[in-house]
Image 1: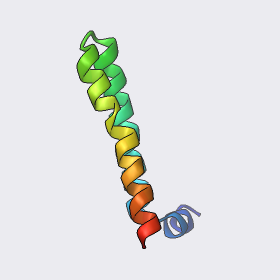
Image 2 (image 1 turned 60 degrees about the vertical axis):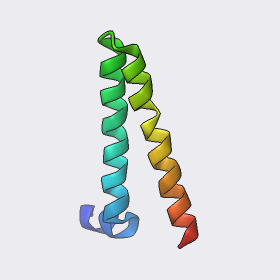
Image 3 (image 1 turned 180 degrees about the vertical axis):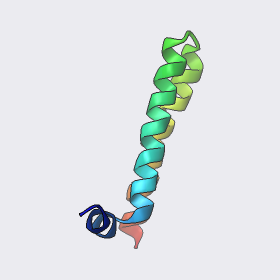
Length: 60
C-alpha cells in the first residue's frame, strides 16, 4: 500500500513535501521562541518551495 502511494505520487514529491513541512515547523519554533524576524524569513521558504515545485511540474 505504501509502496503504491510512493509510486503514484513520486518519491521526489514526497521528499519535497517533508522538506516544506519541516521548514514550517522550524519557522514556528523560531517565531515562538522570540526570533520573530528569523521565523518570518524561514516561513517564507515553504510557499517558495511549493511554487518552484508547481512551476517545474507544469514545465514538464
